[in-house]
Amino acid sequence: MKRIDIDNAIRLHNLWRRQFLNAFAGGAYADMPLSEHRGCTLSKELSMAEGAYAATADYAQLIAVHDKFHALANEIVDLSNNGMGDAADLLLPELSEASHQLVTALDKLRENRDD
Picture 1 (cartoon, one colour):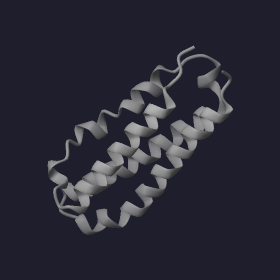
Picture 2: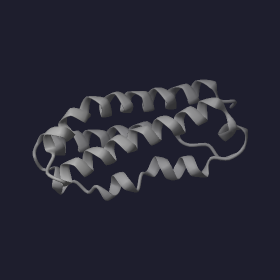
Picture 3: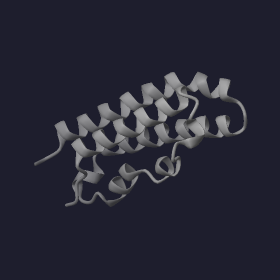
């Protein structure tokens, strides 16, 4: 049974989130390597999970929250790239909330998994 390293997943997610928000707030958003966002390492880990672990409701919830987070990040990137930075700014609080939900889902998965 292949499981994700939850502590590392949270660390990598928080690092990416900080870089994303700092780049956006500092006006250097265009310089951020957005390919890292679209090549999410957590996505790769989630896709490789196997066994009963990957068949739980908590795991399905994690996938849904993760997908929502990236949909928001994609929308922010697209708005910004199309000259609508003000509209992108309005989505940042929602992205932060989705980020917190993602970490909560990862923590819940850790709490409820069989070791």
